[in-house]
Length: 232
Image (cartoon, rainbow, N blue to C red; front, side, top):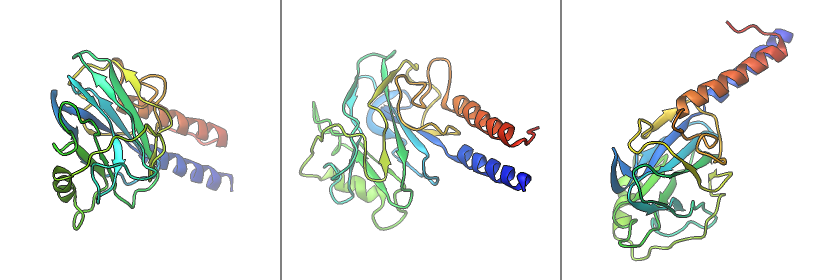
């Protein structure tokens, strides 16, 4: 019986390790400032996985605001908004903002609400989490954004529809154009903290992948010790 309980606990720990942290660059593609999110779309399959937005487009001043397919450049009622984070130098400081995804069955649409010196949303600075492959696709979302008649800047809000942040924008000092471009890591961290490292984003001495592996492995080791199961 004790072995069954321990095995079940370790299975839950393994599931926690499977949750990912995906990095999305804000205003930067391959080290060049652009009115884009990179990658513009991501697929998240595990509830409580995280998405960390790194504001490192230089120069730039951007937001991540939740919208809808019907109105790409207007805030979704009850949606999240990171607020602005300006970047004026290649060495930062850069901003990080982490969302925890609570609904992986419904698309999450977002846009940059900056309108000076040009409207970023209509210029194509939009993104999506889990967009459908047919019907209301991401390409259709971009097309609707490009012809939007209204662009609205919402108030800063942490909790959104299908996702939430636990803290406001934090700062980090990762080098511009670092290897932590759009992709996934094995971090189970949720929410931004007081620094880039605690938010799940890389610092100058760590990466999401290494931090997440240590955290998840330590969690499994703790459970194994608690239930008397040896990990080889």
